[in-house]
Image (cartoon, rainbow, N blue to C red):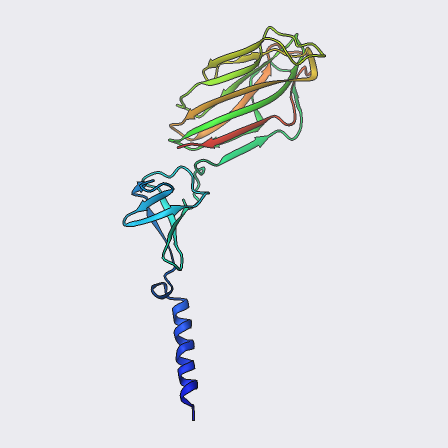
Length: 243
């Protein structure tokens, strides 16, 4: 015969077990929803009647986002962020860089095999390039960008001016500070060496219509019999989708 205590204990254990898996009891839940308002209260989004606090990782919330919602045991709602998709996440920088130095001798502008990335359609990106380049003065170093068809925006180009030969003991000299179309070739000054490096910085806001390739193109200004232009290891590209 089972005593009353054992029966009561069994009922209590069963209740705890059932409650541990029932959101109505433990007040914890995971669901998804569409953002209907942003920052009504700082750091929050509204998903219908639910007001959820964003996690630090959920950057640049937008009305219409599909988000993952998590309710804590105390009833507080948290917006964990957008579920992963094939599109680039907003506000998350993607870095690309050259792990090995590359030399060229042709004057044909060609996409760099490392500083190349695919952009989504109907999106806006911030693109920034840090270029460690070298060339002899006879051939010079120049760049342009490949962008998806229909992409709009302009790039800035900063570095040694194209008429400058930097001395072997100085990294100074006259600079260039132009803003240009993506496909406009930019010629940089150098240290009159196929190995000694100079620095250039290029950046832009790129707004796309169609998906496609964004890449740094580079080449010599004048073709030579041997490689006299270089893009060195450590050159990098940072691409961040903004919208």
